Structures are given as C-alpha cells and as structure tokens.
Picture 1: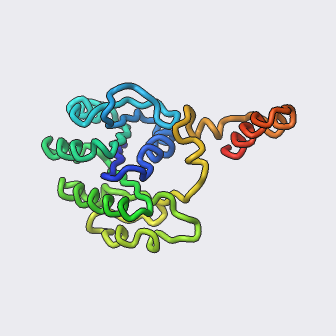
Picture 2 (picture 1 turned 90 degrees about the horizontal axis):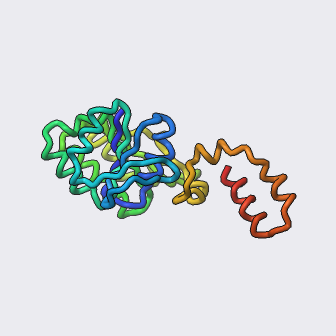
Picture 3 (picture 1 turned 90 degrees about the vertical axis):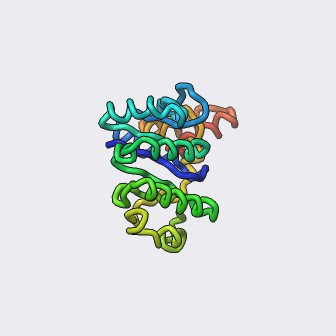
Length: 213
C-alpha cells in the first residue's frame, strides 16, 4: 500500500503517524518531503529525504515500490500538491492520503483546507483518512473535531476510531534515535538497574526509560 501523510499545518503529528504507526506495520520505505535533502532518521526510523521539486524522483519510487510511505513536511505541502496537479493522474498513485489533525483552531482550519485541496486534485473521499490526534480520553471526536466531522462523505470518509489519544510517551521519544517498537522490544530490567545505582541522575534516567516502555 502506498500512503501519503499530509497536512498544510505543522505540529499535527504527521511524522509520528508515518514513522511510529505506519512504517512498523507496513515495513515499507519512508520518504520525507522536506526542504533539506539528506538521508536521516525520523523518530528512530530510517528515512530518505527529497524536496517537493524533486517530484520526478519521488514518482520513480512510488511506481516501483508496492508499499511506500511519504511524509510531506508543512513547508513543502503547497509545492508538492502543485506538482501533483501538474502530473496528470499522479494523485491516484497513492492508495491512501492520511491527514492527521490536532485540536488547535489553526490546525483544524488548515486540515479543512487540506481536505478541500485534495478533493480539487481529484482525490476521491474514499481514499482520504483523517487521524484525530491528541484527543483526551474523556472527549469524543465529534466534540473536539465537529467542523471536520461535518465534511464526512464530502471530503473524506470518517473513521471515528481513527484516534490517537494524548500520551506522554510520544513526547518522550520525539527526536530520539529509537522508535516505539525499539522501546517496546527493550528487555532491560530497569527496576533492578535502579536499585543497583546510587547516582540520582542515573536513577532518574532509568526510571524514565521504564516509564516510556
């Protein structure tokens, strides 16, 4: 499956969704569309970086790989969608367009604009999924994202269970060199390690590692 993760807005969890949730399940190459062109890692996952203007190179990869995840950085979204529009039919090369969103007013407005822009490019609503990010456990999707839910059927197909609840673990691993899968696979006995050290800083480091896992 070829998936594009996109939103005009930054800080909605695009890279987290791509690197922490989609890539470990698909075991697919991850490409980041960013302004800096260099191989890097995203939250502990290997990623190839391309600029939006290198759209031809991206098309090569999309057409070659049956499974692929493309994470479009906010600074490149406008140029990326412009180039999709210039390349007839390329919007259909992705099986799904995933649009993460958080509760902020600006983020929700940008998300509505993203959904409408995808529709204008000819992406069918059935291929667009919204991921509702940072929802509190006592909230419902309708309460927090009513304006977006109102576009169900017109701009996208609503999946009310496509929710990521707020959890500190995402902040704990953000920018680190390991993924959620790495954290979960760690078998270190941190309680024993905490008991064996007298260094308070080391105790705190180990406690945080245990809490993350």
